[in-house]
Image (cartoon, rainbow, N blue to C red; front, side):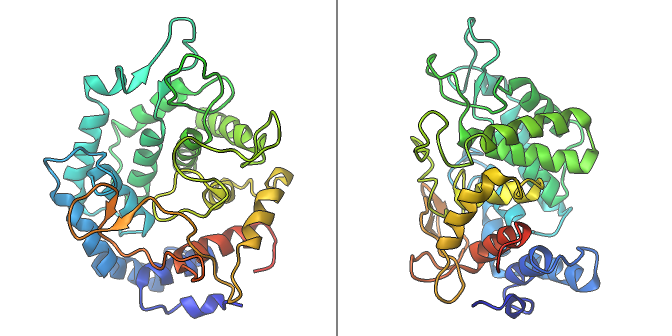
Length: 325
């Protein structure tokens, strides 16, 4: 079995920090954790991701190296907060998200007979809120407006959906998880009651499906995009067994009985050495700009080799659920 404390002093500060924060529950304010956060800012992963700061002529959403995803990835590795070099990137992302075209067709659709179901890729707003909070670069004027936008576009069933087909009447799990994560982070930071209510509704939408299974027939959810939900995705993850359980853990709902089947599935993925593998990815390492490229090395991508990043997340989930780690 993997010894969790073997990561405490890992040579990669991203792994060491992640293990100490998630598995040991060490406060972010301790001298050791503050030192690790500074080291993250100087490490190879961070320096590789910071290459995304020089993409002025590319779309902010360029997969996966554009400004939107650069901020997401830096937040994912716990890059140190408040770096002013990120402000211009934040500015580009927000200008894009508040441009007149952003909320118009084809990006957004609102049908006269379904005004309560705005078709909008709400994962974008969710990621932007979560990333800015994690990086300590919140635009105090416009991020609250992104929160307002998500609340206004939440569907009656508690989720969100970008499906432009008029026949779509149920929210999408992919388009619900990331708004839920962003709003939950905002609620923790601000205590807003209206946001707490919205996150509870979104969580219930996912829990009604036991996270991974369709309500109507109990079959596994099979999204049209974003990868199979029963495989562990990394580093970009829209919706899968681990990301769904990770968010449930962050919002304090992983103990809900409706998470048990997903937890069972996750446990079965543990390798003989106690690690967990990356089973599916839509990224590829790249030293230049290319579709779905990533500048950083996110660890092994093999069904037979454990990945330390996903392993720490998986053990964190299982530990929070009271399962053997």
